Image 1 (cartoon, rainbow, N blue to C red):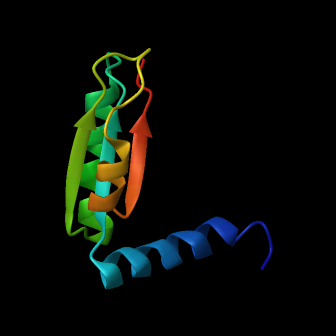
Image 2: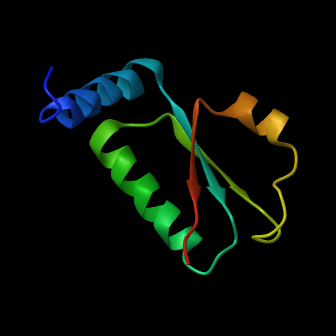
Length: 86
């Protein structure tokens, strides 16, 4: 596979994976000004294009503080998108 068609092949495999496994997508908001907006768009588009079993949002209390209870969170989801939306 050449590097020119690698992204298309990766997207195709991701789409099959999401559909076959009923993926719950974690959405970790770092509490920056545009993070929620960015995650909403990612959630909506990913769900429309690839199908998801659901999303599990989580918000950090502040951008400079680590997220709590991540061990429990990762057991709820199969993939996580982290937004750093300044």
